[in-house]
Every structure is written in structure tokens, then in C-alpha cells.
Image (cartoon, rainbow, N blue to C red; front, side, top):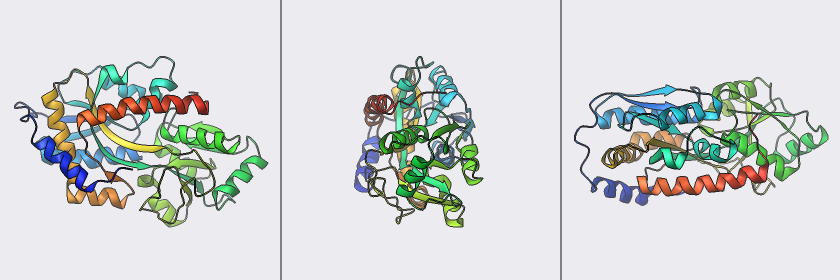
Length: 321
């Protein structure tokens, strides 16, 4: 994960010194379209950013959930929306994953959308119900190998990082675990807590309280480093499984026809929100890091992400159900 600190301060100063803010923006409410149900990591981040940006832009910023079709409903909705800065997409790597996971997605992330800024970044944790007799990754792998096809994992839907992380886990460990997709992170998490599924990859923003209460057990971090929220939880590599690193980011995009001055105004607002002490504190407390990069940096990142996830989809054999 990139470090915030001085780098974000430089980015913010560069944004602030750029073109003057769009003179006619914003003069009415702004909508963040989220392709996930309420309660998951994407939705939590979207509402955190919306609240702070409402203060910054001087207009109400509302979150509108449009789940379904692996986030393609929301992605297509924004891709085809007017490029006026009032209908924006708040999403995760799903917008990049879908370019290779779906045979003919109803939008092209590079052609139809333009990056504004990454608000924050985090990772997913491999989590199991406390009732499952597996206290670490190796015990889970042993259990899965002893009972091929009998264990299930939940995800927020096809194409999500939860889905891809689990498919990579299966590939790297040689296990047969069945995918049970749900319509969003909240019902996926509910199924995990209830023991209806035996594992899931979940963002720490959504599971912290359940791990602390003892209902869930976090086994490993699907990232290059441990999370400050749960420092005792090892990385997947530390737990003995190589090649299961699934970085997670939360970002704002606009229709590609959106004027650059509006895009830059919005990027400045995201950077200011990410840098604000109260927002930064809340993110860090929930295991995420504030970012706030430039539109140009995010566009390059999005191109790289589409290429990287295409390789992950190919290697893992992940498919939409």
C-alpha cells in the first residue's frame, strides 16, 4: 500500500494550484452511484466521502445504491449518464475486473468512464465463522482437502474482489470450495455470521466488530502487509500461502464526457476529504488508508488494474455464474 503523509500533501497542493474550480459547479445535489448493497466496505466508504464532500462542495452529496449484475448495472448507469458532474460512480476494483470477467460488459471502463480520484485503499481478510473448526489457514486448507466440495464461500457477487480472492485461494491451495454469490456485501456477511457458508474474503471496514465480538475469526490478510486494525492477523504469505494478494481501493469516477475542469474540481474535493483529520482518523481506525490522488494518476492506475485483473481472471479460471 502507498503511504499517505507527505505524498498526499504534495498531491493536494498540486490539485489546489491547478485550474480554477468550475464556476458553475456545484449548484445542485450530487449523486454517488454504488453498485453494492448498503453496509459493505464500498458503501461505507462512499457515505464517509459523501458526508465530507457535502461540506466541501457546498451541496448535498447523496449515495444511491444500484446493486446487481456484478456492479454492471451501476457501472453502465454512470457510463451512460450526462457528463455534468452530478452523477458519479463510487466503486472498487470491480469496475476493472468486469472488463475481463464478462464476455461482453455493457460499458468500457477506459472509453466510457474517467477517473477522478482514489479516496482510500485497504484489503480483504480471509474470515470464517467462529464455529468452524479451523483456527488458522493451514487448518482450513486441511479441512477443505479432506472434504472436497463440501465447504462454501460467500461473495458480494461475481467479479468482486471477494470472488477473485477466493478463486485465487482455491488455485494456490489446490482446494475445491463452492462459490455462493450474494447480491452485495451485507447479505454475504450475514450468511457468513450465520454459518451458512464456511469462509469469505471481507474488508476489515465491515467485519471488525464481528471479529471483536467473537462471532467471526480472521485467519489472514490478502495483501502484502498486515492491517493496523488487526495487527495480530498474518498475511496470507505469512500463513503459508503464496500468491493471494488482492489490493482493494475505493474510488470516484465520472462519465468520460465530463469536462476536465469539473473532474479536477471533484478530485480536489476528494483529496481534501481524504486529508481532513476526522476522515483520515476514521479510515485508519477501520483498517483503510486515505489516498486522494490526481485524475491522471488514477487513470493510469485504472489501465494497469484492468490488465492485472485480466491476468488474475485467466490464471484463476474465475467465471460468472
